[in-house]
Image (cartoon, rainbow, N blue to C red; front, side, top):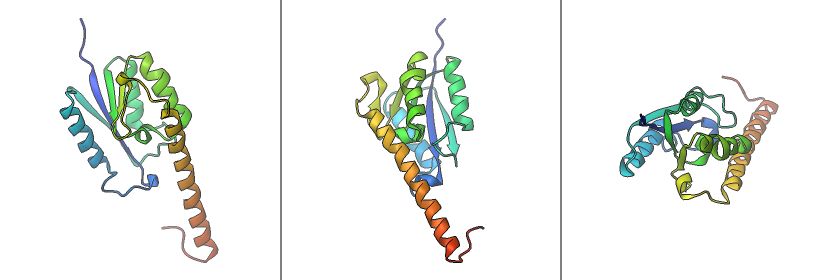
Length: 159
């Protein structure tokens, strides 16, 4: 008996990502994902969302739950806004998109990046994923420098 697999709609938001809270919010991403799923015939959708989690590590509650569901054979497609929502760690994103997802016959779609594994992969995708990681590192350096500067100038650096 063939079971119908879910379509996972995955959203992640971190204030460290440097996007404004309205257009990058979890609710905005959920709306975008649901509209895409509806417009493209994806049914049996299930949301997974990690709000306030960085993409630089994969220790995120709903991400881990989604991966467990993939390994259990419950998910056939994963849709996310863009590749950086999946993660900002070049090696780990590659691990999932090039090894884990194919191993479990899971199609993945990054809407804004125009990526759909069912249509083949883009040779530039690993470079884009590397740029996502570098962006995260750059933001982190800038935040640390700003905090250091405030501290040296006598401004309060704690809440």
